[in-house]
Image (cartoon, rainbow, N blue to C red):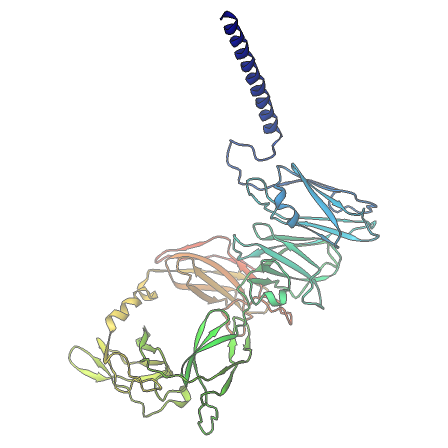
Length: 540
């Protein structure tokens, strides 16, 4: 019995010793693996700054390089290797492998380079990030050559009116432009819109910019926000550096086209455009001279004259077959607006016998009465277009009644309501925000400009996006009756032939420079009955 207990104690000791040894091994392995793991350190303040470049080998701008086996780029923190491969591009194209080791990015050419007298550009996009997902603030552009000399010329500039959440690229073209599609060089801006073209040959250049990546600027400016420089060209033939190239990013130079048509009846439809907008469309006569309409089954071709903020154009041809359709939908009033003591009333479809303004039937008489406190009178009206009537002479009128009589669509469907009552007081309530009822102030100052183009100043209210304009005369300007609030003030050359108050953002083909502009650096607060004077602006 004693021997049994002794044997049991010995086995227990062996088991305990085994567990201790294995637990110690597990503890050591865990410590080793923890030390070897790459990633962000825990604890401390939150990291919100992306990787910052520390060094490049070979150094940027190196010349007379005979051979490169490895390009080493060192940062101030660990790099997320998943962000690296797609962020690298090399011009001219070479085969290479890339590795990320701790704080370094290593680029290994498949074959040692350089070719004789060749300039190489390596671009690293801002999309390179650390382990916490913070991207670089600025792109990296590395240049080296096998030639004995390297040009040191460069152009620096900044994009204005950018969206902080968007990425922007800037393209450099030789001037005069021979190929409007293929730029000499494309660079990415930093997070603040700054850009730099470096190590350039001493030539003449033009610059364009785009929200997003640039593939075909000539087409993309129709879709993406874009900018074109405000000089005819920039010359590096007699200078090494050009600074302060300012480019204003404006809305796309859109050319819309007709995608489809919703036919409402044999004379009327709604056009659907490529940008999502809609437009009422009166189907024209097949034979205008004899006033013969199209028949069911006829093919109808449409193209319309349109304009964007800079140019007029004709839409692409759109064809459709006129279907057989029975229209039983009554017209209705879709909007009532009062403006300058006149009321505009818009209907959902064209009224009977109103094909267009030149063909309005004089026999079409609408019954519209106005009521004051004592009397009722027959109201005067005019057709603004086949959908809209304007009622004038509203003095002392409290409300207006529209009667069904003669308010019919093309297929004789009568206005939905037998009597429509429009209260003048209700409509004028919406006018209480007019400038006459707001507390206003003024801004005045001078503009230094030595060109020969008229200058427009634009004061934009930050709260409601209303724009106010002033023409500069004898280098002076004045805004009167500005509603109280905060404003952005900027000025530009008046080059826009469609709308002299609208900024001219430039046309690419054929090339037309944009307007020179100046933006006041601070927001301006306008207060009631206050005048801000001596607010001066200088075109460089």
